[in-house]
Image (cartoon, rainbow, N blue to C red; front, side, top):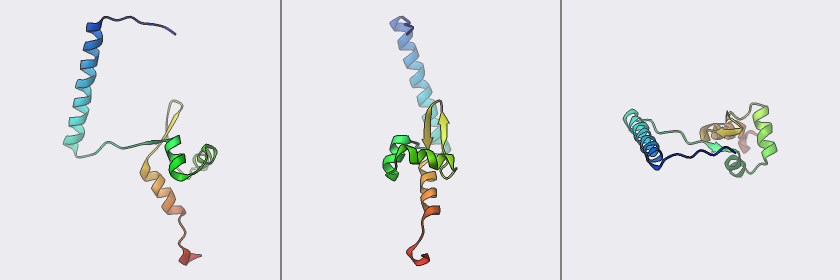
Length: 95
């Protein structure tokens, strides 16, 4: 692992600029009237659906459930999970 030593003043400036960026992003969201999307990871979806990670992988492989992959991490939109559940729902009247 590579270590990097920086002066406290440089770290403080970096933290200040990150906070400025966060404030700007928050104000842009507020001005647009669009709320930032909430995403769920594998563990959250497995708990929500009461399925194993392998079953979740099968749902992705068969393109039943949409997902986004960033690096090695997979994310899901809650709306996509609800849509999958509604499409797969069979009313007892139709059986």
